Length: 344
Image 1 (cartoon, one colour):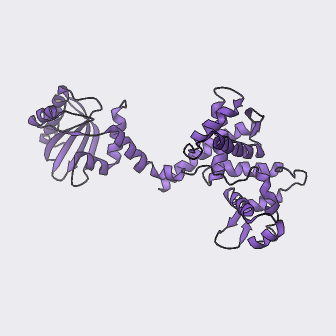
Image 2: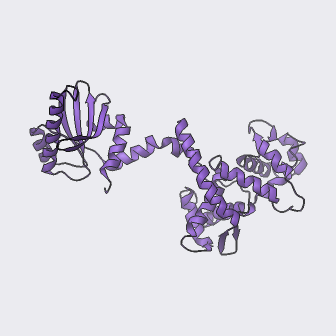
Image 3: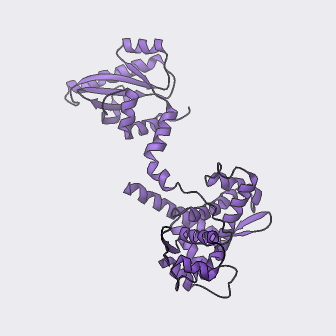
């Protein structure tokens, strides 16, 4: 694997449990220092383990005899520090951590007092992703979902009744259609943060954002969102990009168009369909060309409803609000991730 040693070192130092496993120890060692300057160079890591000190030199290259001489010189430097009272007392055990080493080379190193342990750089990086990045990966694990709603304004009919009716059963009687259709609309409105909904009971109400959305109604815009409704939902998406699957899907769609615009503009729909599928993590869900077209069409419709994109039969464009949205989105996503990491 091609990787800088410092990157593996960073992971090992931040993960005492992984270092314990790598060195096959009974307990986690305690870090004393890293990149310690000594007369013969700079040693990678120094740990305390029980009554001993572990001098650890990490390599991403294959074994070379000069590595043994290097760690032995470091050990002599540390012995000098101990004699000078600059380092705590304890037996100093040198280690070489290597991606791979033959039995013969390992025995040769051990004959000179240097223990060798193998580690797998791929496993170290996988550990970092699954353990250290788990707060982030779980936080951003949402993926776009297909609720069967092709345009945002299709939820307006039932949303406008919520100021007077809070019973789902009564809503069903009022607006008609199938129970499945109403459920999908409620689910979609919930994803956008417009309603307060507990799927286990019959009660449904407008959220604070939902109340503003209804207040922004404009009869001139019957087949789409009003300008104020679009503006409100744009803010909802850009300020809370990870709050739901639909909201993250809308944000991801606009990001995809912006990224692809660096290659060609306008962005071809055929290119966007496959790119959006991969970018949004749906490659195993939308495996067919039809499914990818379906997903891209649905989320591009939402972005168009919000005034972030425009679309012809073959191409998509970013609007002025779309370009501003991308810039604002990057800022808010970074802030959300940073705050989530601090909390966790």
